Length: 473
Image (cartoon, rainbow, N blue to C red; front, side):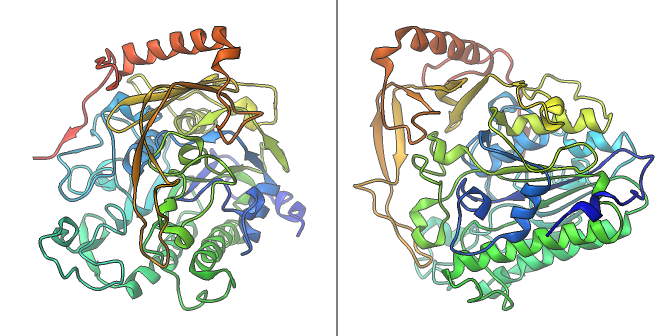
């Protein structure tokens, strides 16, 4: 379907800065949208979004785990810089520090209305909920949708001594208050539509002024939930059904922007927090052949879909293969919206020229692969990736993949140092360090700079530029 009539519309907010919509997925792999090779389900609205703007093929989440990844998106910082790590639950003793400036806080200085709907995962209590981090409205869950006291069959854990059985009720929060308890698969089934409806209503209510909408879906994280309207629709199992409902959600947001004559002047970003949780088999997505997945520093864990559309400035139908990371979203948005940059140092760089169509601009030349609390496990420079000796989770044999809501078994293996050329070897299975000692040396020197500033647990190096997280007492 042609988008030309939409582009020709006169934007209602012509004198204002662009609206910003970030649609953030949970555990969606690089190969899950059809425009990235997914299927056999259909994602026509996500594909149309890519056709209307720019699709990135070398975009990286900051870490392959929920909280760390989300902190980078919101602040423009490597998670290690701001002492964020892991996937926080109700026992967490830290959260995103309120001194860190989020995208929402920066845009509010320019008069933007702000809202977050969906999964937060940057602090489960005040003063670390969205309303205390720059958002005017919030409706969602404080952490992952599997952080509840239910077995994989949806029934309460029979072994009440098991650590998962000790989770408190999973709250659905509006503002700062719990308005519902998520206590069944049926409740999970309602989440995608509920968050979507809130997003559509927010757009409708704020069409007269610039706004920032953060729609952070709980899916496709397990346990998978899908409404009756989409159950069995895809013909590709429940994962396919969930993908088609997520695609519907994207379509609803885009339709509402179009209906209110806002599409031309709205930046829409679609991406994911990390790669797929492969242990869940047919309830997990795919990496399009990249190595491993979530909870690893292989590219299957960090390289994810990223689509950016803005008809007023971003040329349609472009594919950008330059290296970009989650930290780069904040400074790019700030530049386009003429918002101030954070007062404290960040790690993101603006991609404004690249987004406008200069395909030869490479603002980011390096990417540091951190995991665990602050272990520097690899570094990328250009197309080269140097992996450092460490241990790593693997989904390969002797690990066993699960399915039908149940996880498999995990295995941890020792990984030797290796050098990969990601353009010719995206699956990271051909170590060429013996052929390129000068590249190894260059990357080791680059890694040492990250160790000195951001720290490294593997070498027991304390970073000189690390800031504290917010304490929860």
